[in-house]
Length: 440
View 1 (cartoon, rainbow, N blue to C red):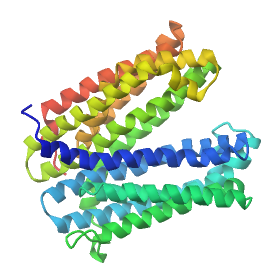
View 2 (spheres, rainbow, N blue to C red):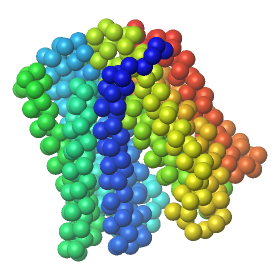
View 3 (tube, one colour):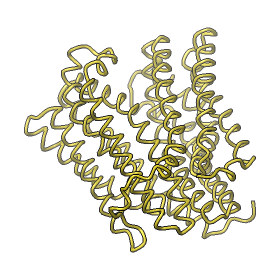
C-alpha cells in the first residue's frame, strides 16, 4: 500500500468513531433493563434475558434489510443519483414496516410456544411474558430504527444515529427509574425500552427527512418498486441467513459448554462478555468501510474502495492489538470484576490470554465481511460463517472440549481457529476481486 494519506485516515475515523460510540451506547442500553430488573428479582433478570435471546433471532431479519440498505443506498449515493437514492430509502422503510409488523404479529399470536421453547419455568415466565409482549410486539419500531440508521450511515451521516442512541439511552434510564418507583415492575422496564426506541426512531426519521435538499422522502419514494425491493433482498437475505446461522449455532454452542460444567459455563459467559467489548472498534471500522466501499463503487473508483478497506483494517488491527495486550496483561483483574470465585477467575484469565493473540484475525473478519457486504457480496460471508460456526466452532469445539477432554480451553481453541480460517478465506475472496463485478 502506498503511503497513508492523512485525509483518508481522518475520513475513516470521522465515520467510524461515532459508530463505535453508538455501539458502546447500544451495549449499555441493553444492560440498563437488566440492572434495574436485578432490583426486582433474580427471575426478572432471567425473564428479560430470555426475551433478548429470542429478539436477537428476529433482529437477524431486520439486519438483512439494514445491510441491503447500506449497500444499495451508498452505491447510488456515490453515483450522485439522488432521486434513486431517495427511492431506495423509501422502499427500505416500506419493507422494514412490513417485516416489523409481521414479526410483531408472530410475537403476539405465538408468544406462548415461543417462550415455552426456552425451557423457562413459571416463576420466570411470569416476568418474561409481560416484558416480551411489550418489547417484542412493537418490533416495527426497532426494525425502522435499524434501517433508518443504515440510511443515514450510507450517506456518510454516522453522528445522528449516535446522538439518537445516546438520547434513547438517557430517556430509557430516566423512565426505568420513574416506572420502578411507581411500582410498575417489569412492565415499566418494558415500556421504558419501547418508548425510548420509538423516540429514537422518530429522531432518525426527522433527520433523514431534513438532511439536505438532495436527500428527502416524498410520497413517490413509498410507491412499491419491485426492482429496488429485489435488490435489497438479493443483498440482504444472505446476510440475514448468516446472522440466523450464527445465533442458532451459538445456542447449541452454549448447550455444549453447559455439559462441561457450571464453572466452565459461567467462565465462558464472563469471557464472552469481556470480549464483546473488543468487537466494538472493529464493528465501527467495518460499518464505516461498508459505506465507503459502496460509495466508491458508485463512483466507479475500485482502487479507492480497495484502499479504504485496507486502511480501515489497519486502524482496526491497531485497536484490536491494543485490546489484546490489555486482555493478556490484565486478564485476572478483568475476571475479578465479574466474579470472586478463584476457580472461575483462573478459567476466564486463561481464555482471555488465549484469545488475545487472535484479535487481529477478529478485526480481519469484521472489516472484510463488512467490506464484502457493502460491495453486495453477501453470499460468501454467509458460507464462511456456516463453515466457521457449524464446522469449526461446533464440530471441532466438541471434539477438543468433550472428546479430548480439553474442557473450556478446547472450546476457545476452536473459536480462535474459526476466526483464523474465516479471516483467511474472507481475505482471499476480497483479493480475488469478485465483489467488483457484482451489479445491484
